[in-house]
Image: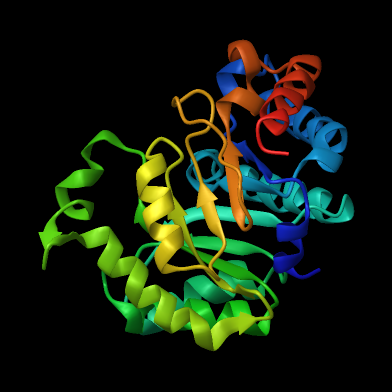
Length: 256
């Protein structure tokens, strides 16, 4: 599997952020069954599935076992996985993170943090290239306090655009055809920021979190991956396959 194939699929990403309290007396078993059934039902309508690592790590060793099982299930259904962990550290540690996620599970993508600089991102880029995966670097995020640094004026432009410009140059080395393996995260709740980033990085896949429950609307355009978590995984605030299918159809109708 090559992660870049996700860009030729419907532009919708299912975010999996499991909350055990919504899954009865045997939560892990129900999360496993519900998620696999949901993936099977939604697979033709999805580009990828995004697993929020923190929710699995919080479940301990059994949670990490569950993560790999669900990611393997997604692969069987032809769906690439995005591991949302926002990793970032010095070179040797970055290499370890890259081995743990990108190389241990070829054809997947990982979200990473650019705060330590481009040298700390290179291990992820190289691993993604070797393993036919992808990397999504945080540019403009959806949290209320994101502007503290991301919107900081530097040379007359917000910092997140300087990050995007630097990544556009770095990503050219990892471009294969129309798309680079170096993508970026730009929240769907800030449409203007998404468009500004896209203008600077025409060859980068853009992961757009925040669709649905956070108020973001899906955006239409090549290389845009609209990510919805609660709106698809827990429509109406609970596990519901039928409502999830209806929600996916409604979101896709806005971008196809």
